[in-house]
Length: 360
Image (cartoon, rainbow, N blue to C red; front, side):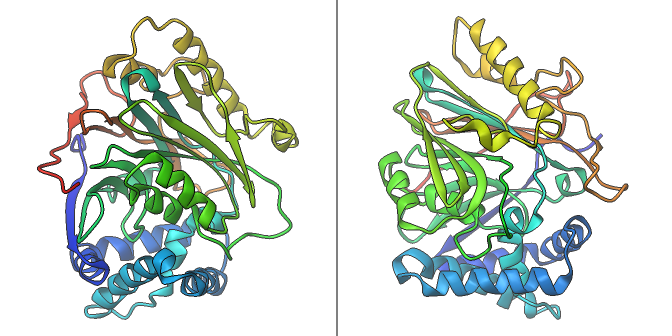
């Protein structure tokens, strides 16, 4: 039976110091993650590396206040790895753009926010080969909030929360495009920009500052119970308005113009089922606490459940399966974060992660 949680890594300092520490601690794991994605991504190495280079060039073209720290941190990771291995740092940019470069709308993740209690959580559904490589990372910058996030080695932005009580979850969506968008800010770096924010309003403004071209949904919240839910359909941002006490999202478009789901009905059956089942469970709630959110995200009823065992995926090589890598619950009000590794098992409790004394 695998361990119930994930490896914990802390990086501290300015962008260069953080990146160097990241690369020194996780060099081997980053190389392993690159190997997995070279197997998963239906693209040539030349294509992936060219995509990584385009992402770096985009970041370099930005005002230094927007892109400078991201480039410095990623480049420092690469320098640390090259101190031990022959490594092309463009792979790091490709990893951080893996959603955009993947070109596959793998149904992954169910996200939920309880506004009344300031709780935010999700199941992260992805490739089983990455479960053992996932890390729980603490980022303590020279300025700005401390960040706690669950991520893949080499990726500097992911799902989690910060010491200002801002949290973010991610759902990958499907959207038809003429080409793969790799000129704007990849969605994982968008998540990092949100987690760098001191407030939810600042996070919202941050989204407006970048050119983003992707197919994803971000559900973000804060300890006061505020939240926003934004769907990205290419370069269009579709902000969802909710009056209910609970916000739920899976892997299909929910905002006006759900014609974006047209043509993907078969591929989106899991998403539709999880959304319907989640909505049914929400309608029966009389309380909105941690236990209720955990019960929702642990639900394994039906053939296409919210919490998923690892199963084959048609777009991946046969040795790779997809299921629930982790369940993440965040109490944004009290700055507490809980994890469960892998698909739900009755004997596997949530683990409260040690957050220490954060810098606000």
